[in-house]
Length: 273
Image (cartoon, rainbow, N blue to C red; front, top):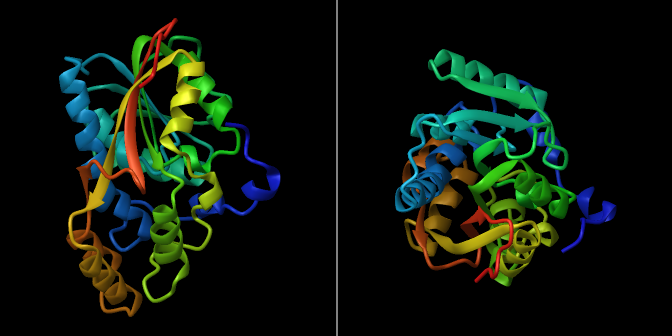
């Protein structure tokens, strides 16, 4: 997989994350759905893997690449990790740092990009990169940098959007474009930047990261019910807070839209299944 072309990359609206004020923690904002609707799935997945691997997070170091306003970062800190979050948006970092301080959480936040992480080789026991890989222009470089800063036998957790017909229908058309149901800003995601599991596996293998498998996600409700809920929000009958209290993702074997995975850094990986 190669770097995204400038023409395609210009279509994605990453400037959303530079909006002034708190766009992350206020309950009636679209990004707060990351906490109510996405975090239960992704945090549950990573927590289960950490238990399976018999990792004791206390005293171990973790980095979140693309931390935004700190919604996932705070969960990583609560697991027990000595936690660092890095993001290119200064406005989002201000929100993240302010919220962590107000809640008594010791988290280091720093400005930077995934393509050039300002850390020494073998710095972290775990690296998290969630809802980010489909936003970067140079994905191969980001994966290479994550591998570089990860310690040998360290764990890389990620989730991203699959490039399928169903993801185009749901994540682009229904969630972003069709006003009858849309709840996300236009161009928050660009379908051509979505990543197939086989593509991420090849990148991991090329960078000494041994893929350990993937798990998918599904709504906690039926598709017709989900459309009904989205329609209520689009009509102004429901707020984002209302939507988040009724709709969230659960772990499943369906990888057509959003899927998660993890990899372990091995200097000479033999295979990636």
